[in-house]
Image (tube, rainbow, N blue to C red):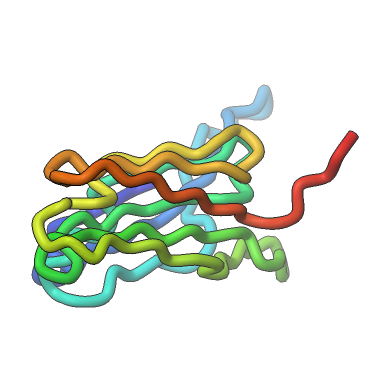
Length: 140
């Protein structure tokens, strides 16, 4: 994953990359872009300031802690489909704070299976918790 929270007048963007190891035939190891560039939105949002990907790479959560006067937000993305070996991402959820200055999304984490997230808001004066379900979890 690449991130550039200061790009595009600090709107930010995130780009995924895939590593291909070197082989015994002399082909060098490479990193190649995977899917489209995920754009931030508005100048100053700092989309991409925090990023986390699930273990299998099917879900990603991206923080934009300065969105909406520093209230902050996160977006959750899921692999939508694969077409001609190109991964595409679909935005499935956005969660935001309504308190300016919270910087909600300054830190993010996602479970291995991509079904639970944790979001930090270091300047929040009121403790609050939000949960996001990123799809249908299968019961075993």
